[in-house]
Image (cartoon, rainbow, N blue to C red):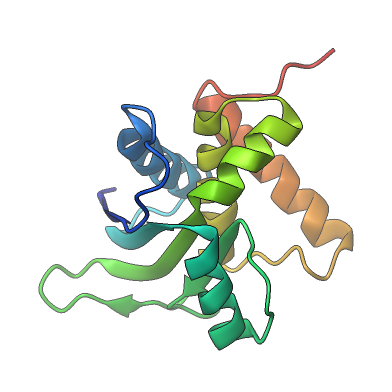
Length: 160
C-alpha cells in the first residue's frame, strides 16, 4: 500500500517539533494498515490556526466555533474517487488546528506529537466512514481503533 500525504502548514504561530510531518504520514499509513486498506491512497492534511478552523467550521458545518480537527471525506460507503493520473483512492481532507492541539496536549498531559497523531488518526477514521457523533458502539469502536494505531506508533497512553 502506498499513501501520499500532502501536508500544508498554513499557520505561523506555533513551530511544530521536527518530525511532526513524518509522524502525520505514519499516522495515516498506520490507520490504513489497521483497517486493511490496501489500495494506493491520497490524503490532504492542512495545519491551521484557531481562527481559520473556526471559519471553516462555520462555512461547512454551520458551527460558529473553533475545533481541534475537521474531516472532509471524498468517499462514501467505501467508494472513493480515484486520481486519474495515479489510480490512488482520494480519501479526503484533514484540517488540524495546531493551537487547539497544543492546548489539548496540555490539558491531557501529553506531548504535542501524541495529540497531532491522535487527531490525524481520528480524522483518518472519519475519512474511512467511522462516525462517533452518534455515540454508543460506534464511538467505542472508534476509540479502540485510535488507541490501537497510537500504540502501533509507540504513543499509547500509559496504563496505570
